[in-house]
Amino acid sequence: MEKGNKTIRNLLGFIDRSPTPFHAVQEMTGTLSDKGFNELKETDAWNLVPNGRYFLTRNDSSLIAFVVGSKPCEKFKIIGAHTDSPNLRLKPNAGYAKNGYLQLGVEVYGGVLLSTWTDRDLSLAGRVILAGKKKPISKLIRFEQTLLRIPQLAIHLNRDVNKKGLILNAQNHLPPIFSVQKKSAADEILKKMISRELKCRPADIIGLELSLYDTQPGTIAGPEGEFVFSGRLDNLASCHSAMQALTESTTKDPATRVIAFYDHEEVGSETAQGAGSPFLKDVLERISLDEGRESFLRALAKSFFISADMAHAVHPNYADKHDTEHMPLINAGPVIKSNAGQRYATDAVSSAWFESLCRKAKIPVQKFVVRSDLGCGSTIGPVTAANLGIRTVDVGNPMLSMHSIREMAGTKDHESLTRVFKEYFR
Ligand code: ZN
Image (cartoon, rainbow, N blue to C red; front, side):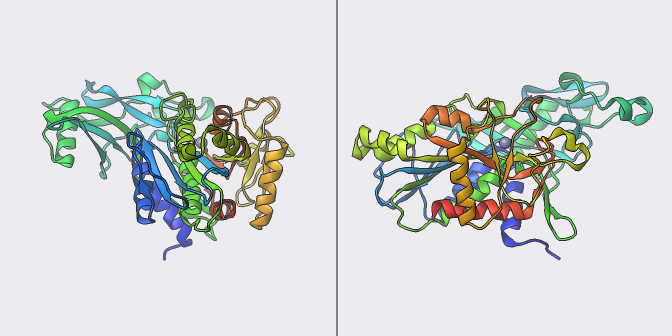
């Protein structure tokens, strides 16, 4: 029997088809095209019309989509999120032979909960650059079959592991096993597999950006289907909620509604397509060009940014990691995140504003602040707030196992956040 409602099954399908930011952006641009959004190129001249629906990408891994307001320069209502998740990525010369095995060298991307990548059924996905006739061609690739494993050492050879914990050295202990030693080198085998998949010659492959991913699809869990277990909930779940809100936003609102999904949040956002880049500011300015720079700046001053990223639910076995008055629960509603050190961009005004939005959507809301003796995480909120000077709130749904290869969140929360975003864009 298929459990769970359509929204959650749709979310799981989206995440399963999105093992990398490239795939996530491809999925979303496909949906946007189906829903009547027109693709723009940064290199072209734009002729935008009031109430028009548009999208564009940068590096094929960051995406901005928008519905122009009936008064294009009135103000901007924006939701931001990120497309990337922590994972392991192949090194440029990945393949090597060692002790009878063929292995692939990997780098750690972002704050990976490393132990969760061991003993999983792993495969490869990402982007391949092929030498084209006139210029290089970028192709997405995803191997469906399980190809790799990072096996843990047997407990007989690591007797203290349950007492001292699993200590993994990124250089020595993370390279997955690819095969047993053969006449062909690992890189050669990999290139042959890619060329079969993309129907090209191995010699045509001139660039590779491949990541490891878990081949096990996400699932709905719990006696009443209250949970969702999947990789990359952080932060594709937020992208999914915002996408639904924008694509269903049809009213002739004077405000321009925007979603901005960035790559590279997990490594600090300071890249050409990250939240620290001028990508969003450039797009907002181009939407307003006809009205002049002063109108653009006035619109910015009236605008609002919801930075959506997952939040830390309290873990029942480690409740002392939370402040006793700030213990978000799964399925008890989205979380407003704040931090005196401005690691989150929320202030009293933006918090109150989001709370009233939740009240309008008839859903509960929770608050999170990290324990005073622990360091605070961050997200795209403060980066974009500093970039644009727009009032911002940092929110997100509560989850467990953040940055694990398989995370855990609540089905009800996902529907709730989607409802709030729909209210925002209504
Ligand atoms: Zn995140």
